[in-house]
Length: 305
Image 1 (cartoon, rainbow, N blue to C red):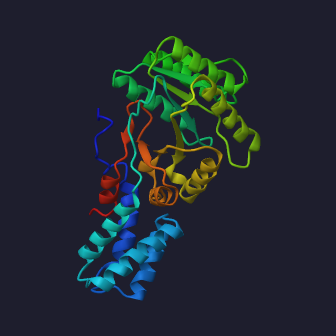
Image 2: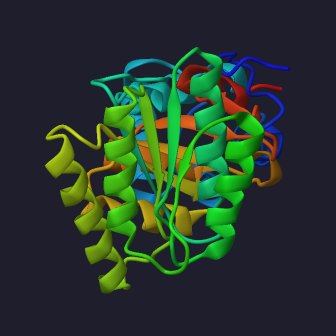
Image 3: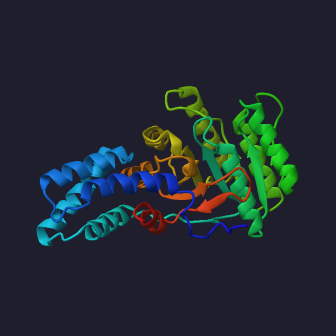
């Protein structure tokens, strides 16, 4: 079983890497200088790799400026330049396993179907494996399956779960989760929330209510708000990140299904345009299938034969 903090991204990134590298190499192979035609083709290749327009233009400008200062000799050199330009976009660094205060509260948000509840269970397991006491709050009361999933895994992993039967007030679940964590002096509280979209104003208002409830119990809570996105959705994931960032401050992102898609390039634009770090990758269905995201290895893997 791999440890969460291992840096090997080669397998989860295989589909994205193949698509990205193939497009880029098709543009630069055999070229010995950077000209406007090559840059146009490179721009199209980056956009086809699900990197958004603004970030793509930033990368093209960086390569163009460098070409004016330094002669371009071969394919390897251009790939090295592109690698450096990509690395420079990841200025916001993630923090893994933060514990700021007791309890350290993490709120999970995201649309339905992205693997939000599964990701919460994986992170709960990872904290538990590090010797920390954990509690899970089932505040996605709109979806009975989500509550059942948390309860079942709570029993398997010996992690307490706060839940209520029926469509109870999600904020009351969050409050009781905090109350239990404080009374039992627990380290970590992870709270699931209902999947929602930016145009569902009542659900976005409910998310704000959950936050206010947590703050009443502990002014600094939640210390983290993690957005879960599905890499397979490509640019839709970018739009989801923008919508949730408008509704609540986001501290990090968990990406699921990266191993099954060629659309992982969307992460580049999210990190660059929004300044939200990718923290973890979900790489399977088991509790241990969570992997720390290291941007250096991500970029290296994208351009690696």
